[in-house]
Structures are given as structure tokens and as C-alpha cells.
Amino acid sequence: MIVSLQLVPGSLISESELMENLGIGRTPIREALRTLSSEKLVDVFPRRGMFVTSIDVQNLSALSEVRAVLEIKAAGLAAARSTTSEKKITVELISEIDSIKGEPDMGKLIQLDQRIHRHIYQCTHNSFLESSLEQYYAHALRIWFLALDRVEDLTEAVKEHRALLLAIRDGDAPAAAKAMREHVEGFESTIRKNL
Image 1 (cartoon, rainbow, N blue to C red):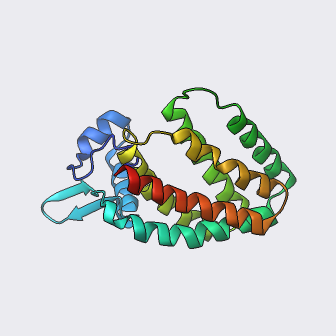
Image 2 (tube, rainbow, N blue to C red):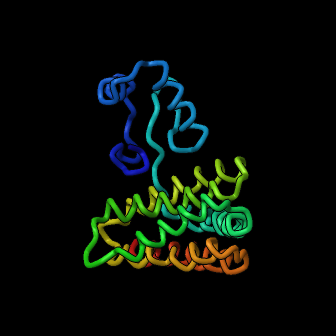
């Protein structure tokens, strides 16, 4: 809800509303909010409450710097370490990209983007890297949702993953790293142009 901006950046978080909307108790809500605070998605102000962290597009450069280093490393590791069963998933993702036609549903494109990135992170077989990348990806995704109504061609951004996935499928770590660098730089450039 925070990532997709259903909970508006800067808005006060109501535990009781979350409990009602999600159908879960106070303890799991508080644990989740504590985790989200450590991931910088929730700001906690004593005696004032908890707020959804604002999105500062000025942080885009810093986020891109971190993602460039970590995601490029992850792409190379994924190419070198992915298993036979993971390569089958890689091939399925390539097929999904190839099947994109016309004006696809934005929600489905974003879900495909998420699945691609999470698959790459899992293929690194490095849980520390995977959890760090998940956190940074969530912040990048919030910025993406903020720019969504201004981005003209999300389809091309998702199709960029094809070269990356082919390199991972083929076990070509340098090509995977190069494709990921271009993707991360392209993301920053697209967002800057549209915001």
C-alpha cells in the first residue's frame, strides 16, 4: 500500500484503519510498521504518530547510485549462479516480455517488472544482497508510481529487461552487468525527464 501510493506519502498512519482494512490484529500491524520504519518507508515521531515517508525525488540520484552498484553486481551473480530451474523461470519471463503487444495494462507491466527484479535477486543466492535490493527496489518503485501518470512508454522500460534476462539465461555475467547498468541508468533518466 505504501509502495503503490495507496497510502499517500506524508499521510498519518492509523493502526485501527489498517487493522480493519487488512483484517489482522494490532501486534502484526505494529511489527510491520516497525519493519517499515527500519526500511525508511514509515517515519515515527514520538507523541505525533507514524507517517508514510514522503517521496523526495531529489533522492533519486542517491538511490540510483546505490542501485547501480548493487543491481549490477546482482545481475552478474545471477548469470553466474542461476540454477537449471531458475533458468526455466528466466525463459518464461523472456516469453512474457515477447508477448507484450499494443497498449498493455500498466499494473501488469509493473507486476512483471517486480517479478523480473525479484527473480534476479533470488538467482544471486545471496540473502544479504537480496534483502538489500528488495529495500532499494521498493523505494525506486514508489518513485515509479509517482511518475506513472507522466511516463509515456512504460512498455519499453520493461522490454529493456529482455537483454538482461538473455544474458542471465546464457550465463554471461559481463553482458548481464552491462544490461543492468543500462536499465538502472535508463530508469533514472526516464524519471528525471518525466518529473
